[in-house]
Length: 304
Image 1 (tube, rainbow, N blue to C red):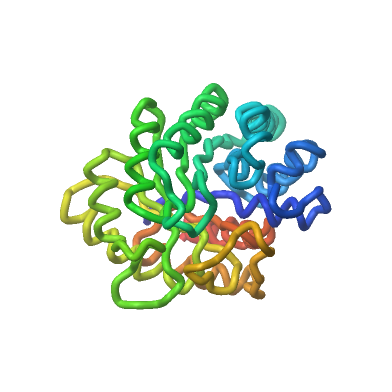
Image 2 (spheres, rainbow, N blue to C red; image 1 turned 120 degrees about the horizontal axis):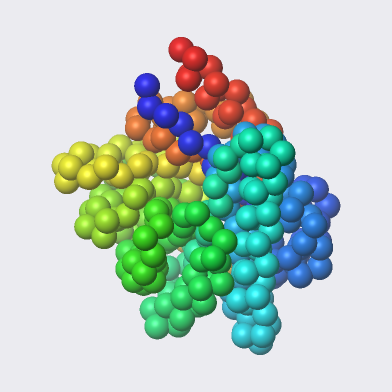
């Protein structure tokens, strides 16, 4: 029996759900700026649901969401504030309930989600380094989220290679079901897994894509991991969005939601686990109720 680690769900939509200030283009950074207590509540909701790892709410602390001027003035401070909040929630869980909650530092796309065509390596490295420096005193591990291309991975890895903490690389996939899993850049998951193996990462994850495309990605990555003899963890945190098109403009409108119930999401999670994924959580639109369903299922699996 493989041990299951449960991640939290999507912070942005959870903040919106609980009534935090939330609008484009600030996204999840708006609560950090105007109502940080809502960020604390959102983290706590995922802890109460059964998450083992909570992710720092720094995803929108980039110029793409904050704007260039605000990013220069406040970006690093907001990322640090977000890390402090997550650390305090994790610490309180340990002190009050004996729960060991780990905090994952978040490295987001520097130029917006799902748009590998907007990537600029030099500027991305500066943004990634700033977010890394802001969060590193407060986190236990790192998750680079929503990586859309191998070029993005290389820049992020060049920054995360500075730490001895565990680093996990989460790639976002094209939302078209096919026999070969692809990143949003069109590059293959197999090539991404080869890069992560060579870089010495602790795991390869897939996130912020529809649940239907995750199974093929797991299989393609596992074949590479088995071939290279690495001990990488496989993980999935899918979204609750309708499929995202290649020309998606993340700051123009809120992405349309679908209606995946906790039971629906759990059915996918069981498939991912059977294929080899041992770290499972949720991305945009996956709420504490979905995470609670995962935790209930995990308890059954571990007792069997």
